[in-house]
Structure formats: C-alpha cells, structure tokens
Amino acid sequence: MCGIVGAVAQRDIVGVLTEGLRRLEYRGYDSCGVAVLQHGAPRRVRSIERVANLAEQVEDARLSGTIGVAHTRWATHGAPITDNAHPIFSRDEIALVHNGIIENHEPLRDELKALGYAFESDTDTEVIAHLIHHTREEDASRDLLTAVQRALQRLRGAYAIAVFAKSEPDRVIGARAGSPLVVGMGERGNYLASDAMALSGTAEHFIFLEEGDIAVLSCNGVHIVDRDGATAHREVQAQHANHYATELGPYRHYMQKEIFEQPDVVADATERVRSITPALFGAKAQRAFSEIDSLLLLACGTSYYSALTAKYWFESIAGIPTQVEIASEYRYRESVVNPCAMVVVVSQSGETADTLAALKHAQEIGHHHTLAICNVPHSSMMRLTELHYSTGAGPEIGVASTKAFTTQLVALFVLALTLGKERGRVSTDDEAHALRQLHHLPAALNSVLALEPQIVAWAQALARKDHALFLGRGVHYPIALEGALKLKEISYVHAEAYPAGELKHGPLAIVTNEMPVITIAPNDTLLEKLKSNMQEVRARGGQLYVLADAGTKIESSDGVRVIQLPGHYGPLSPILHVVPLQLLAYHTACVRGTDVDKPRNLAKSVTVE
Ligand code: M6R
Image (cartoon, rainbow, N blue to C red; front, side, top):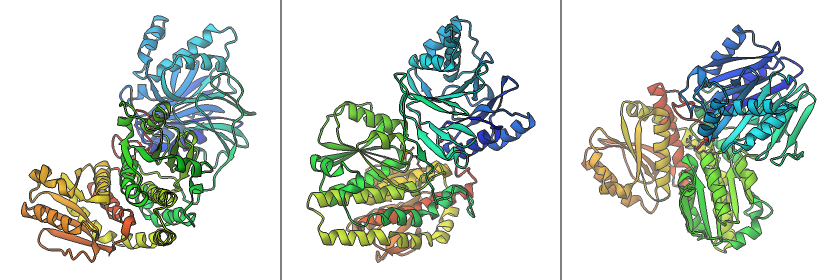
C-alpha cells in the first residue's frame, strides 16, 4: 500500500528518495513520484510505471535538492494516472504525499473550491494540500507547522503525510494518525518513511511516531509535538541488525527466497523458547493469563488462517474456548463482550487497518487483556496491546505471506502450550516432548522443501487449469484455506477450500475430470474419513493431488497423484503441510508468468480499509 519517504539533508537527497521508494515497492503500488525544492521552487516527476522508470525520469529531468518528499501510491480515490500520483502540489507552494484515506474529503473539497482552489486530481489527498495552503495563508505567521496542525484538526480518517513548503526551504514535516510513519536520523540529515527498511543504510537511529504526532525535521534536528501541540520526547531506537537480507541473492523471487528461509526463521523462533513460560509474552502475561477464561482472535487474510489453525490447538491443548473472527467483520458488528476474553491480534505487519481498528474497537467495548502476535516489532499493534510476541521472521517482501505464516503458527503453538501449562493441562513431560518437536521443526521443514521437484511437476499441470479445489480436515482445514488463498493470490487460478466432509453438501457438483482437487492427507485420526471423501471425488472423475504423510498407504494411481511427506508430525503437522502448498502456488504462478512478488491489485500491507 502507499509508501512515503521524506528527507532534509546537507546534500542532494534525490538518491535517498528513489532508493527509499525502491525499498517500499514490496508494499504494492500503481504509481509513484518524487518532489524536491530546486532553485527555490517545488519540482516533481511522477510515473505510472515502476520506481526504476521513475528513477530514470528523475535523472533525465536533473532533479536535485536538499529537501524533498516521495511516494508510491496504491490507488483508492481516483484511477492510477499521473495526475493522481503524489506528490500533490497546492499553488506551487506546498508539496505533499499522503498514505491513508480522508473520509470527509468531499465537503472539504467543496469548501476549498468555493475559496478558489482548482483541483487537478481526483484524490482525497489534494484536499490536505490545499487545506494546509489555505490555513497558512490565513495565519499572519505563515508558519508551516501551525498550518499543518490546524489543517489536520479538520481531517477525519487515517493518514500519514510528509510535506514541505517553498517558503520554508529548510524543513520537512511529517504527521501520523492511523497510518505508520517513522523518523530516521542520520549523520548528514533527517528522514521520514512509512517503514524503517526504506531508510536502512541512510539513517542510524529511528523514532516510531505515536498516533497524533507531528515531526518537524531540519538538518539540525527533529522536533516532535503530540496531538495537543506539546513537545513530545519519543524513544530513539538504534537500527536493528537483521541477518535476513532484503536482497534477493540467488533467488528468482522474494516469495521463493522467503519460502526457503523458513527452516532458518523457524529455527530462530523456536531457539528462544527453551521453556514454556508466560514471560515469553511480556512482563504482565502471568497475571493476565490467570484472569482470562477464553480467547478472541482477530486477523485478516493469511494471518486469519493461522489464527484459525491455532483455535484447534487452544481448545485441544489448553482447553480454552476460542473464537476466531475476521477483523473487518468484527469491527462493525454488535458483539457480546466477555471482559474475561483475551483479544489476540495476529498480523505480519502490525499495521493492517482492519485488524488495528478491530483491536481498538475491542478495547473500546471493554476488553482489557490484549496480545499482539506480529512480525514487525515496533508496529502499531505491538504498541497498542498489553502483551506482545514478536514472531521474528525478518522482513517479508513478497506480497504473498509465507515465512510470516509459519512463524505465527510457532508463536500461537507456544501460546497454546503456555496457556495449557498455566491451566494444569500440560505436564512437564508434555512440555519436554513439545519442545523437542518444536526444535526439530527446521529439519522437518528442510525435508519438505526437498520435495520441490515433484511439486514443480504438479504446477505444470495446475497452471493449465482455471479452477482448483483444496480439501483438508480438522486442523488442516485452515491449511487448505491458506493453500487456496496462495494459489489465487499469485497465479490467479480460482481456488476454493473446503473441509473434506463438506464436499457432498454442495461443492461436489463442480467436480468433473477437469477439476484438480488438492488434498491434505496427514496420518491422523481423520485419515479414514478423508479417504472416503477422496473416493467421492474420484467417483466423479476429479483429479486428486494428494499430500500424504508416510504411512497413510495412499498410492498414486489413475487420477491420483501423490507426493509423500515424512511421517506424521503430530499437532505441528500444519506447519509442514503448508509448505508444499506455498511451493505449488509459487511454481504455478511462475509457469503462468505472473508478477509473483507483486500480484495485480494487491498490496503487502493493507493500511486502508
Ligand atoms: O500484515 P497482516 O498479516 O495483518 O496482513 C493480513 C493480510 O493482508 C495478508 O495476510 C494477506 O492476506 C497476504 N497477502 C496473504 O498472502
């Protein structure tokens, strides 16, 4: 989704802006642009192509300057055309970039038009630029900070902005409310970005702005005011060394790289769990866990599927009633509040607008105990919750979530064990056994990744299809859902997932000899039931692609292709079974020639509703 970079330095900052945008590309965008103050006037270059193309145009235009703002736009209001690309100007005085949605843009637009402002774009953003311009004109001091403060008070919705004014050539102002914004401090300048990764190598220290903060950046320093206009002192954090490189290395795509990183990230995630203790979730966890009687998990997309998987663990291992809900549904419905239910938000980014809003809604209606399970340590969700657990997968660049999912599952499994132990349902022996299983997971993942050549063969066949069905039962049903989402998302093959027992209640009608039916077949207590469901598919000519654990005695035959996994891995089996499905989606997309890391219409971090 939209990405912001801003800079003020004692040197030309154009390279910092374009490199920052390049690093934000993974968020998804359909246009981009850069504006700098050059020879006393704002100049901009905008493009509806990729950042690499923008960088060439910037060079051709000989853009240079010591202050500037830049943006990748994921269209919401107005088509992805050059006129709607940011930076947006107001009367050649104000240059502004924006992430988020301004809900009251229509009345503001009418008001500004009546004041004589001509609108050149269809964006809600243009309203902010003109409003700042107008507010500044009205104020005798013509101070940009005052104008930004006053203008922002009139906005409803979510935003992060970066703005500069022609007549204040030494500062860039950033503000956030509902969308992330980080300040980066370097030796020769200060910077703004939607994501610290955009400034890696440029800034050494970071301040993660709080809701309502406005940051004034000059070469000499950073001044932050809070939503009440008071000077705010925010924690300065050193850049976190991350050994998961953000470069592609030998891989063709980030998604492929991230799939193959899973043994390492899972090793890191399990390594730090030497014993099962509430302290893993924060200092307040012990007390909080003793006060709750149920869980309410809120998430979107792939994170929702990890939460759904974990429901099976929470109920079977910890015996704690668990409800899992799609965040965008929960936030708008009238729910019955159980103040003893702990709200658990699960998110890779920690910034997903729907999950964030669902969390705030839960807090407003009376949920006291909250836990965030996130991959981004300083994200909004991590800062808004009582308890936190960082999944530690490192940067995930591919839009399709892979390693974030498996590490979420590890975190949720550890939570299930912790709650089970606290509730007297996990014995010392159980704990030791579970820890052994967790610590052996990286080796097990490696043996599943070794199946790639067989999956490539399946992908060749699947790439010629328009539809696919995914089947699973029990704790593997959410894994079937995740497999179908992965396939849709990056290969554009229409896919649906069903609990295998549900097939005969409707979906069997679409099974013909043209329909691939990808089936997850762990060697668990539901195996014989699943085998019957597979017979139902074969009897209608359906083409079975079965991921079978060793020992299931499911063999390849006419219309039945089998890839054999290692022996059944107990409750952690979903973490192994999802990997071939990730590879299947990946290779199908490669055969179909889609843009794997940046699938059409999608963004990595969905920071608007
Ligand atoms: O950052 P989050 O985990 O909150 O994101 C939630 C979804 O947008 C995300 O999982 C999405 O479904 C992925 N693109 C799926 O691969």
